[in-house]
Length: 173
Picture 1 (tube, rainbow, N blue to C red):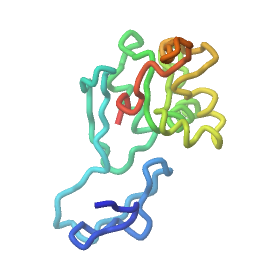
Picture 2 (picture 1 turned 90 degrees about the horizontal axis):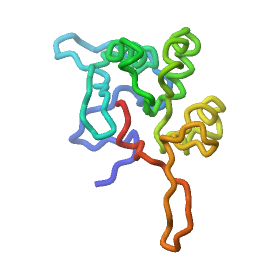
Picture 3 (picture 1 turned 180 degrees about the vertical axis):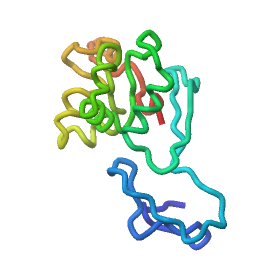
């Protein structure tokens, strides 16, 4: 059955308010529960995966998937410069990068790690966000990230550049 965003079927639980939060929207304050006689719920489970798909670490975010929460999670998993990955691919990468620059934690991360966004986010977001377009491109054609792009050949033997990784499966969350 197909379902539009915000649409609810009679057998499904009711939505959390009149306008549910989309994943890329800025985080809003969570609504207070009508009662406290039910088990607590978490906003999301965040995972860090290796390119091969193995889960490296995971955590639960109680109220929001804020860039600050993501940076704290990354910092708790990668505590030393030697342990940090070369790339972190996350759909909110441009928001995480902007927060890191603002709060000063980018000074720690910029020596070792580049934050990129997944291809779907980049295609839908690059026009409106200069920071995302300039620094979070998952397949830059300017040679700044040679590990993210590879030379491939079409059926006629003509070379073309393509993404080296499927960023849809490399998401942290």
